[in-house]
Image (cartoon, rainbow, N blue to C red; front, side, top):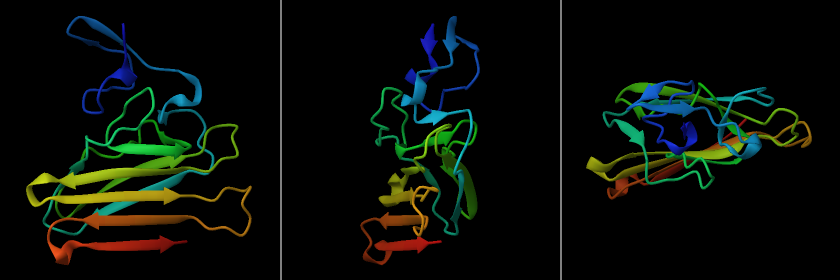
Length: 162
């Protein structure tokens, strides 16, 4: 059997199936996976609106730096909600949604990054979130979008707070 977390996001399925005669098993390794099911305390739903004519794809050069080796995102705290992963592609003039949350039974709020790119125009987009949980009274949730590329007109950084 091959653990699903050993596969790339483009081939991964979060249920057992058969491919090339191999049985794929869902990974259940405690709180080490960056994508997981279960309870979703402090869930944050993130909407990425692409109001440009440039399609975006997950940056597969970015690794989650955990044993599961997901590509395109990094989770410092919490998890990406299973079944609500960042879309592999966000087409021009469309949007994509994904969800992150804390882990069930933990008091740590979600914190992480998702990376998109368009290699044709040398564009990189990083979507970062840092949420404040109930253990941080007086703090607010925040998100940062960083957009970089060769064109000086495209170099910008936006910061949002709620």
